[in-house]
Image 1 (cartoon, rainbow, N blue to C red):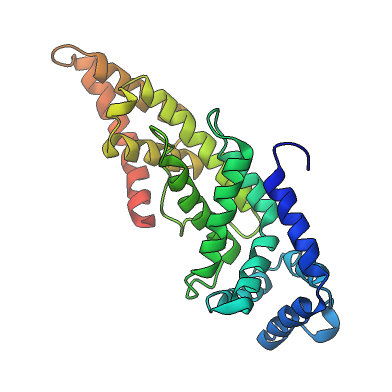
Image 2 (cartoon, rainbow, N blue to C red):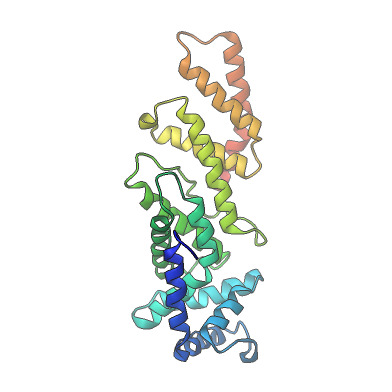
Length: 271
């Protein structure tokens, strides 16, 4: 994979060694067969081929069922649980590569971010709430994003604030990691604009929540980008104003509030 991608290259090497052991493939295959997802003749016997076959199943019901079948084992203890979590991790590697890239900043190295993302996914796989049986891959990506972004932010002054409402998932046909990348880019852009309004160190939870709200509205098509920019512009004027607002400024503020009300209602309903 080249310089700067040692973590994912290491995963590939580790996986190749695991696939050389036929016992692993037989065990995972038995889990899938027990779940009734597929017939024996449909499933390859080798671990590597089996995971590729399962990961390629785009039917949402089949994808959810095989992931749940493996995640049920990952929630246990011992070598079987570790194998199950590793299978989930391997199936999610393409999305994790994109997620890692979306979390990169000028202060973050790819391998450092990849290490955090992979370790968070492993924990998420071991602790996945098994009652969430729909859009399992999407939940795995978003939960990993949730944990990784917070962990990466621990040693930074400020990290992009993320929308924690993980039930707001894209449709089955959309690429979850790509959707996450777009959301992060939107939120970062809004955060940079807010930084011009107020000191970053003084950007408390209220400003952060507003950033996430605007990003959510734009990302979900509820708020035109132009309206989001108008809101940021109004906030900039409010921050720079000395004395009472003029009648024109009050009218503009009222227009912005009216435009945001239906978006806020959708936000509340989705929460």
